[in-house]
Amino acid sequence: MQTIYYIVLVPMVYLSFGVFLLGTAFRLFQMFRAPKLPTTLQIYPEQRPKWLLAVFDALFFPTVRRHKPLLWVFLMVFHICLLLLILGHLELFAEIGFLQIISHEVFIGKGLVGLLTSICLLFFIFRRFRSPVKDLSVPEDYYLLILLFLIVIFGSEMDWARRWYGYGDMTVFDYREYLYGLLVFRPELPWAVTFSGHSFMLLLHVFFANLLLIFFPFSQLMHSFLSLPVNKLRRG
Image (cartoon, rainbow, N blue to C red; front, side, top):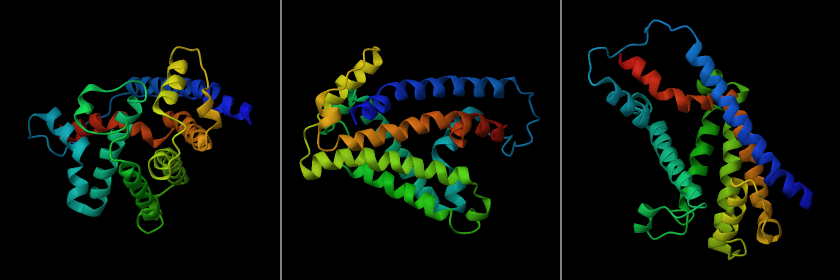
């Protein structure tokens, strides 16, 4: 069993980040090398400043808000929660100064952020079982959303187990020791990471996160790099 822990938590992490970085760089290189297309998507050519409006479109989804307000609510909640989760993961390396004004233990919300993110992903999954979204969906859409849900649910369960059920064997310092070892290429697996009462949740969380990183460069998630340029194209 310890061999499985080591494979998933060490070499698979390095492999997944390698595929993510090289694959993303290659895909972006391909996109920038492709012949430029005429700006047929321009629908707001008269408005200024273009880049500021493109940033507004990328962050606040005004078109979705006008036509699908319920979807817009879930999208906004999901992206806000995603930002908070990213900040929480960064705090597993070191404390972030400006967040100290809020009373929290690494992850803001005392388990609520993970819960809201899970609910949003369930909404995104189940809306694809109804027409017309169902008719436009491809297998990748379901695979991606289910993978994201599994990452979030197992990651959240580690937080919930500590906060709600008293599983406190795995502390922030154990995470930091593990992550710092990966960062300096001297990986170590602290006792709590592999033997605590809910270490299997960490194993599953990291395993599915590794799959996401490997899948990222070849999936629709590349839109995170393209959202701003596409909205700039629409704005003229």
